[in-house]
Amino acid sequence: MNSSIFPVVFVKNNQLLLYKEKTKISIADLVLLEAHKNYTCLYLCNGKKLVVPKTLKLFEDLLTNHNFYRIHRTFLINYAHLKNYNADLGEVYLTGNVKATTSRRKKLDFEVQLNYLS
Image 1 (cartoon, one colour):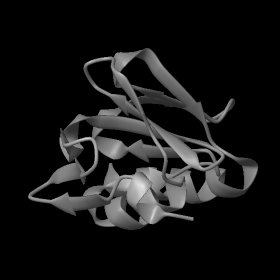
Image 2: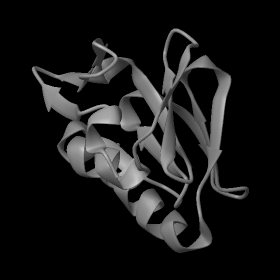
Image 3: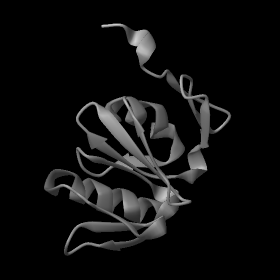
């Protein structure tokens, strides 16, 4: 498989750089990242959505030191955009009316992390 057809993704100066698309996204503007097989949807605070042909695991590794947390095998959230959390339903409400659900396994860890950050 020719890797040159896929974008190179890296973090520099608090920006996510997508080399092939020549796109720079401020990490502060990322609200949620959602996995779709080998693609990741990036939800931005301005309401835009960008699909990148990279796995969520790659983004998780890049953004762990930037206050992001994996709440489900499908979702990686930015704590800075967390608006509300419904513990009974395990639902996370983020900037821009974006909603995600915690997995049963990650729910307790997420709640502990949430209490730690509060």
